[in-house]
Length: 285
Ligand SMILES: [Zn+2]
Image 1 (cartoon, rainbow, N blue to C red):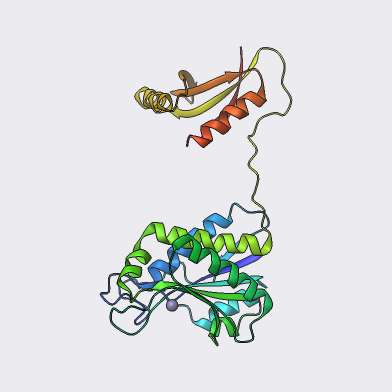
Image 2: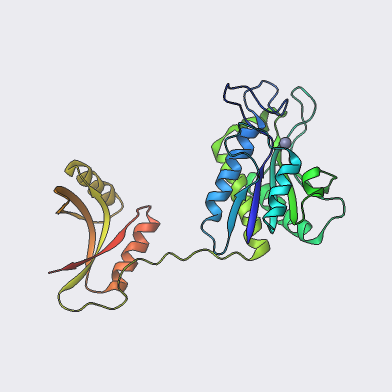
């Protein structure tokens, strides 16, 4: 399915001037675009891990122009997108005030598909951030009116609220919101994650072959020794194995050598749980 992400408004032009009037925190410390575009970026990155999903952006990724509302939905309509998710931060009045919370909009006709998606996204955003639930609402917003597909518009917190402005500026809040939007999409459309299979032969190649679990490859021996120490702290014992490639000597950190592929995969899983990436290497003696 094709999902269109719409980061609301624009950033700064080549001279550094904001391309969207207003749409910033009262103290000017953050343009709304900065939040919207980062969240869109994180949603897109996360959706790459799901099967049969393509993501496009309706906005100018650089933020140098504020793409018109009609152009945004024209793009999604032309591409026959299935879903349109518009990402925004809210504002109330001109100065700081107490308005706060998260809300998600659907068009005034309340299309069932949009209501379903909006409810799921809203639920996850509120649960994951702990912010006030202003609920799913309907509005005659242009991007909701002129889009042919399921369309929602998320208002992820108020720029005019001091506490929420601080959150909107933080990377962790942006990632939380992005993750919540992804969870809503996954739940709504039953998206399946892409399975990552280690690239090794399924059959044992026979002979004295070992499946070695490699947790790093280093040009500097000292970096390899450092990796061994990090692994030791999590109770994994490792050794360095030097090998030549393109005239250079690399030091591989080996954390386990097995005659059974299954045992090697189990070691990789426990390394993964401890936060270490690894891959399998076939080693013939
Ligand atoms: Zn906005």
